[in-house]
Structure formats: C-alpha cells, structure tokens
Image 1: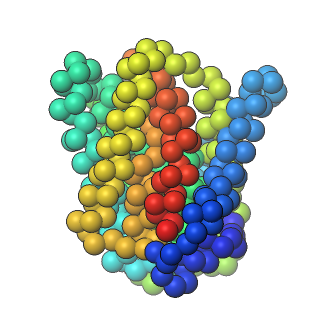
Image 2: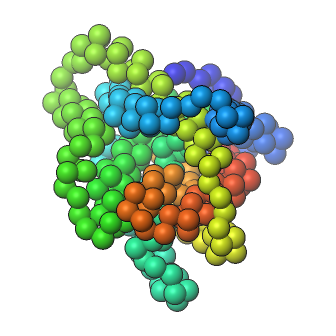
Amino acid sequence: MVTDNSSTHRLQHGNPKASMPAFALLSDAFAVLAPVFLVAALGYGWTRRKLPYDSAFITTFAINVSSPCLVFSALTRLHLSADVMGEMALAATACMALTALASVPVLLASGLSLRVYVPAMAFPNAGNLGLPVCLFAFGENGLSLAVLFYAVMAVGQFTLGPALAAGRFDLGQMVRTPTIYAVALAVAIQLAGLPLPVWIGNTTTLLGNCAVPLMLFSLGVALSKLRLSGAVRALSMSAFRLAVGFAMGLLVAWAMGLTGTTRGVVLVQSSMPVAVFNYLWALRYGNSPEDVAGMVLGSTAMAFVGLPALLMIVMQ
C-alpha cells in the first residue's frame, strides 16, 4: 500500500513543523480522513441496507490472517532498528498503562465498575482506525511505527482484555493469538539480520494489504449494530477516554523526547476511541456489553469529529 500525498512528503522530508497555512493543514487533514470515513461509511451503509455480510468469516480472516500478515510485513519490510522497535513498544505500553491508571480514580469516584471500564479506557482502536489514519497522515514509515504500537496493544488486548472481562486469565486465548507469533517472528528476523525470501515478503504484503480496508469496513458494520444505552454516562466516559488518551500520549512523548513522525504516531494512536474488541470481549463474557457498546459508539463519533483538529496538531 503506497501513498504519495503532500502531507506525507512534508513529514518525511524537511521540518515536519514547518509553517503551513491553515487551509493547507485542513486540506491535508481532509485527505487523511476521507478514505477512513468513506470505507467505514460503506460498511455502515452495507449493513443498514441488509446486504450479505459474513461477519464470522471476515472477523476470523482479519484476526488470524490479514492483521498478522500486516504486522509481519510492515515490521520486516522497513528494517527498523532494535532501538526504534524498543522505543515504540515502550511508548505504546506506557500510553496504555498510564491511561488505565489515570482512569481508576475517576471510575471509583463515579461508582463505575473497573472490570467494565478499565479495558475500554486502556485499549484504543489502534487497529481499524489508528492504522489507516497513520498510513495516510505519515506514509509507509508512519504505518510501520503505528503497526508496532498496534502490535503491542493487540498482545495486551488478547491477553489482559479477556482476563479483565472474564475476571480470570485465559492462557488458551493468548496462545491462539497469531499476532503474538507474527510480532515475535518479525522481531527475531530483524534482530538476526536474516534476509526474507521475496515470495514470503510478497505473500504477507498482499494479505496484509487486506487488513486496513477490512478493519475499516468491519468498524462501520459494528457501529451500525450498536445502540447507545445510558447516553449521558456513555458520552461522558467517551469524552474522558479521548481526553486522557491524548494527555497520556503527550506525557509519554514529552518524557521520552519523541519528535517528528514518531511523536505524531504516538499521539494519534493513544488518542483513538475505544476499540471494538472491548465490546466483543464484554459480550462474550457478559461483562455489561451495553455499557461498553455505548462507549465504542460514543467515542468513535467524537473521534471522527475531533480527528481534523488532532491531525492539524500532529501534522503542523
């Protein structure tokens, strides 16, 4: 997947903070968001028109094939150094951990269940929303960094996510998560400096290229099926998740001295809305799925409204 827009060129060549007219920034932000909106809207409209959609197949394919291939191909193709991989893994872990910790006092003061809301606060939609936004905003280099963030988040979401929702740790769920093995294999290849056979690289890239459109389409489908229950609580917690995610992203970027594209990716990924998988885990384990669904729907709607401003901040 290749992009050749002006915002990508500015971020990869020259000073990413160079002065730009407000109209140019808004135009670049629109160029980034338009594909995200349109593909998600296609999924939303597809389901609303009751057209055929095999959610079980697409979800299974995305989780077990296209997403691991995207992670593997992105991590092996750009030959990131061990320092860069470690830096992004640390940043992603810090963003999620600090966001979860910062939410605990607010949730306790509000009388809300930590088991229900902490996973929703900790795990942002760094996959089917964060990846395409970073791709179109920062190009292939940004996508690779965003995939690193997503990979760390996915490992946590497929291990701690079900454990928090179920109230117990599920080792079987963890060992059945292909993304964990894709990350481990890609990191091992990078650190060992092994050449990747062309046919493997081409195959995983082809399959990985399916991931972003499938994720966006599936996001639209999932949102079409959610209903906002307990609107005031859902919207207030949604706004809090977006605000604290952005604040923790800023804190981590400042503390680690991140700049340029790396800083932009961390801010974008940390500021994403509640991941749809939080709803799926809550539904599977009977962990107040209607409350989590309200946060997914509310935070996604707010994120779509606020994304232009966020992109203007990270792209100027």
